[in-house]
Length: 104
Ligand SMILES: [Zn+2]
Image 1 (cartoon, rainbow, N blue to C red):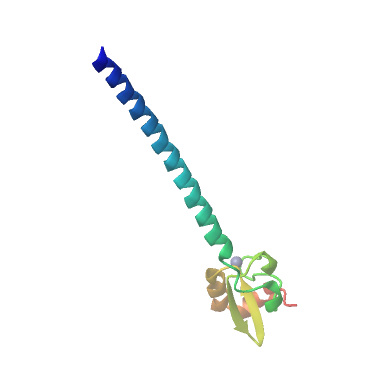
Image 2: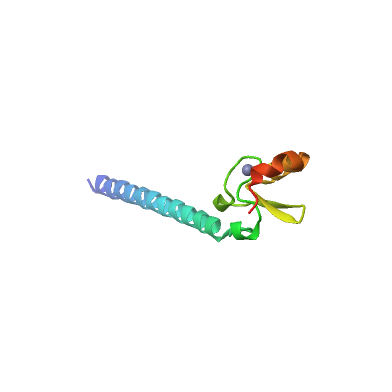
């Protein structure tokens, strides 16, 4: 009878430890997510629409106010692009694409 009593305490203890461990795991995951989000918000945009002379990304047509990741200089103008890919595409044939940039 005494042995059975000890066993039930041990089992109860094991259960509470397991519950405790899973709680800690959940907390750790939440903290990780919060930290990741914080890192994202600290990444400030390098360029703003006010710094460029075009209204639209000439390659994809996206307004520069939506975000500029890269810029190129063309005929004394600063052009903003949503991505380096768009900039490279524009630079393959800037004369044909400059109209789509809608210069200010
Ligand atoms: Zn683009």
